[in-house]
Length: 156
Image 1 (cartoon, rainbow, N blue to C red):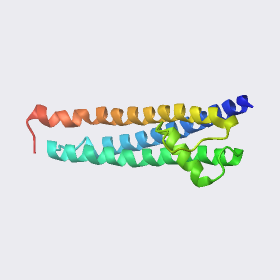
Image 2 (cartoon, one colour):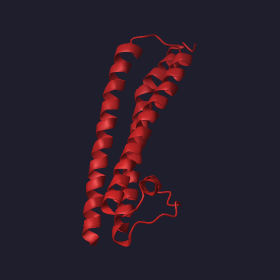
Image 3 (cartoon, one colour):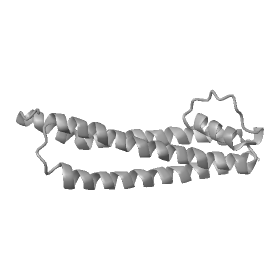
Image 4 (spheres, helix red, strand yellow):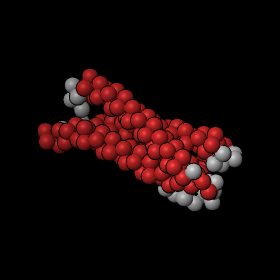
């Protein structure tokens, strides 16, 4: 029975990583178009660029949070469907708790599904790692816009 828990856990990990990657790629492409067409051609002062970067990171953070929520709901639905947790409310709480590696909800899976919960925690670390790497990449992409006003002396 333990192999079924591994199979489900690894399958859900692959699925959620694929979903997350797709979301990040779409956000990256949209962000690239916006930056190239509307932001880079403009001569913006440092104050404007700082506000734009803050807005961009906020705009990136929201869809990333939504992706994490959708992925937690996928795991929760599997827990309920498999009978690993009885109620949908407990399943989503357990899933978010596991995915964030917080582990303080006090909920546990049925014994034969516990490996699945551990695999969700590993999956959550990977998903949050992808999100963190993407936010860092966005910051790096905007660094030339932040440093240009400093180099040219245009600070306003």
